[in-house]
Length: 485
Image (cartoon, rainbow, N blue to C red; front, side, top):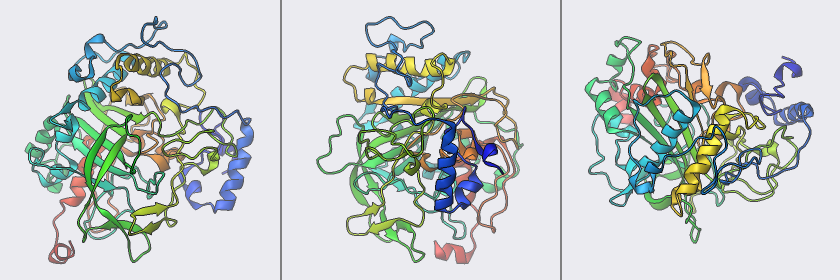
């Protein structure tokens, strides 16, 4: 493969390389390649391009805020959504006939799911992925949130843990202060009841159902990313919740993992990333939308040079003046744990490689980009001092609705076609084969890494990794495996 064939000067950052090359090249060779590829663009100034300040879009173009006249073609949040406590549940059967309609569904979903009830955010009271696997909804009796860290994949017999929820990465997100990022997954009650009643968490059933079986309109999945709150940290711009987390330990292989033998730690966590996936009218592939806290990380600039800083200020997951080539680097094999403090080194330097799920510098006249930026501004202008105002929609992706089993879903992408969340898919942003949600979420046959587990047939349900996790975790276990568990 030649350097010319690697270059994506128009549609991708200059150092984006295919998966095999990004994994196999030695660090020195990779650095040389990145610097060579950067010649396709000039080194820009380094504005804080990742800021989601309501008054500007990615190019600095003014967009409407409260009291101003929205620009022509603007996507506006209906007044009926406000105040936040009164946001109605989104209607999955409404017409989805414009960019605006998809992004309005996304924002309305975020607002509805983050309403507080009884001291908890609404989505906290939904069944979890663990409930789906076990076939029992524990939401009514559940105490503090139990969160999992993104750790190395587990290779023991029938131990999936987060095997299929890693966005195909072995990395651990490490925030300033050295604490790991933690995650949780939920489904709405409708989706839970559907899965359990039809036994879609049963491996035998999954390998016998018609491959064109689909999820129902109105089903919703949620994946949330949290960072641990440091003592004295200002959390006024975050949703903050109490949580229980597993302690980290360095295993015999030198990798950092979960210590299941010790009691969990009670911590405060702040919400930093939020995926909401919803099955809506005419879209059995679902709409995949993602949100972040405003101060997570900077955006790459158009024609960003890998040898130039991305931002001159500190962000929650980025140190001021860090070079672009040092962003989003997988830390596998480099992590060192202080077991007493439960802190890790090195910290992760995060950059948002594709602002709004699009190539940096996408013209503001693009209908999808205009819908996202004007709707973000419209929502923020109507939220007052509500904490939700400190979050923004990165983007949403969907297809033409032609969902088929045994398909990679890449032929008819619409919306934010390079969609990633910088704190949920940190390490796969610069891998071409993983640069949108459907890269990992598809209907192809699933082959578990554990050779003792048979392949799962390619079905439309495979698009949900919760189904894949249930398939792996609920495999019949022999006496030896049960003993090892």
